[in-house]
Image 1 (cartoon, rainbow, N blue to C red):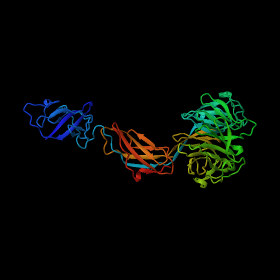
Image 2 (image 1 turned 180 degrees about the vertical axis):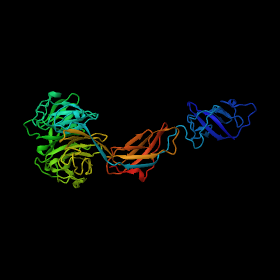
Image 3 (image 1 turned 60 degrees about the vertical axis):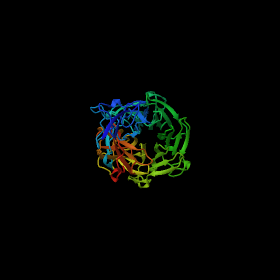
Image 4 (image 1 turned 120 degrees about the vertical axis):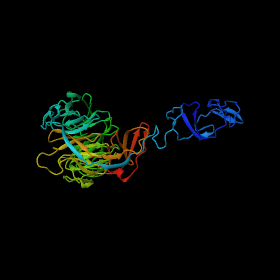
Length: 520
């Protein structure tokens, strides 16, 4: 027969099952389990020793067992779960074969399918009346005069270099515009002033660009004053980092960008150079000969023609809107200059590398995976350039339209981590919000696992993997679909899904052709 024996492990509190075939000893009538012999007692088949004692040479000896893998020389069933509920007799009832045992995670989700999402952009007004004027206020009650450079902070506030109002403005995510810094001396004219100070005590002269620094402040290209300024976000205190009026250190600096080490890169427009400013204020030339030209080369052998927007990627490469060359250029940390995109013809057209066309590109922004957004001013478009040089149009009228255009001379651009693009409209004195769907995104769907485990599934996680790039995920608490974002465009990702319950997480779903996708 099969006898189930409950063993209480010494120095442990859990209960383990032993299920083993034994021969019933000839025990006298009236004997019970508690009368089995203890230490030193004679033993044989008819007189077994107590639990944790062993019959050795006819006598019971104590035998401690730290590990429950064997008791009385018989191995326990390792597949038995030690946490099952007791039965009516105080023993433990093992699970029935094929059931979901307590503490068991689910199996992997099934039928995983992934596909790229079509790019769709929706353009709305964030702030600005459309009139060239000066006013703080909500939404369209606010006024700007020739807004240029934009930057966005971690909280979603947008900062504006208000060029002809000679001020730095702040727009909240809900569209309220206030003045952070600048007296406005000479407002609505092209002649500003210079003064370091706090809030309205500071003065600028045609600020053209703005970037968020590593310490959470703002870097401003104060073009008319030929200076690079620092402006605190807290109270708008403006100080001078580099450049002085009346010198040739800068000549109408436009774009500014900051790398992870705090170095500032400046598009020194009228000097046709890209300059580097260290955190201590030392200024050097990274690339550019100083004359208006177009040359791919290294250092001062390279040529630019009135560069404007600049951004820097995670590897320290600087990208430049080479405005009058109608191209997007790339400058390595060593100063080697190449052309990423643009034919050099003042025209419009999507394509790759020299197969694409721009017409006076101005502001630049860069997203988490290295895509560059361009304010293509004369074409009245916002363009996207991948790290490989593929150019596509994100917003604006690709085909000239009758009546008002979608965008009026877009100049500055800024992009948030979740893909929202902000654009300053030079011609309309407004700031627009471009909400995009589909850029670097994959939609994933799946079926529930065949086995849910010991408890209800609490969440699913879809993962997109590509060698050499961070794995991106999306998580749901019940739905069988989600969207993975911030992916590199134009390369195929492997997508898998896991399911989680209170006991743990399943393995990844099986790979298949339908679980691979290439985001736009």
